[in-house]
Length: 126
Picture 1 (cartoon, one colour):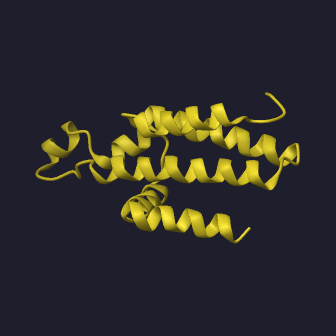
Picture 2 (cartoon, rainbow, N blue to C red):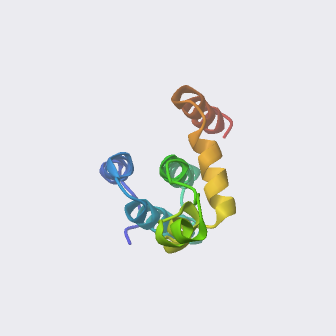
């Protein structure tokens, strides 16, 4: 891994998050960002780099929450429940707990304006 993450990489990461169309892609992005987070702490990267990683992880989690909110819950009789891809089963397939899904959905429920305002406030407080 390089010793710095340049602006082009940040733009690429942001673009990939915005364009993601499935849970698997987003989970992979979150895993990559978690790896960057670990690296940044070990290398004592600048606060700016650490904050950028945290921001993009939050953006990834928000997008996962958007997808999670759209998953159908199991309804109907036992036969229907066993043959439908329920929310719980889908979350399990991507290794996401119900608690994390709930938190990500809460992030996703913020308006775009509120979400961006929160990110900016956190940046400004550093």
